[in-house]
Length: 112
Image (spheres, one colour):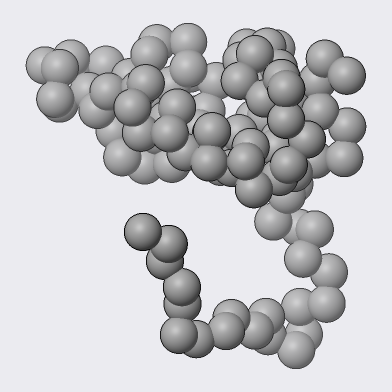
């Protein structure tokens, strides 16, 4: 089932440069070697930003368990930490997804 929003999002008029949302952050560290390697693995074979976003979402959703679901006491925060440890709470899993998503939309993906 395709989700179609009934509302169109409009950025506030003062926000003319939306590239700030693709900037790296200590918690969304998409230039980390572990993130770049996994992104190269996951995104090989597609140049479509939409397909890369789907792949990233499904990897984080299905491939990284919530630490409470597996009985782990490991609490991660940054995207690379989540990937390295293979688990995270909701917020840290979102950081990993954001890191992969930013990487998917960056102009020069790794391994290319």
